[in-house]
Length: 116
Image 1 (cartoon, rainbow, N blue to C red):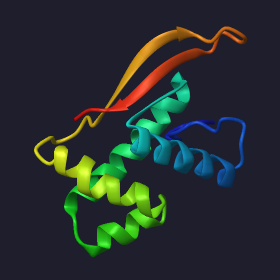
Image 2: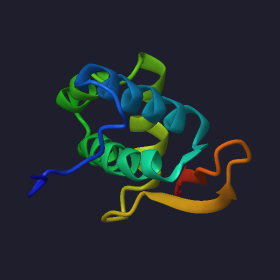
Image 3: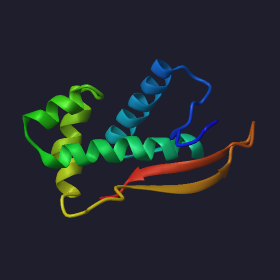
């Protein structure tokens, strides 16, 4: 039974799922918006908002925690640009906008972006 089990599996094993979220999160940080499927965007929102909250705290410990997930460029951009722009915001750092179904398999596509 799926009682109190959160998140989606995306037909992947645990390591592959973590790699998917890390790569999508890094792309979102560097580009500030990406286009993906709705279910992936919903899981990415949970992942990236936690990382933004860590970046807002600042300090060397935050840098070390973020470097576990992202490259040097992405973690620096997250701390210096994104977290400083969102310092007064208490949550809701991302926006998901529906853009319609994908042509070949009709998967619902969305654009996820970081609100500044």
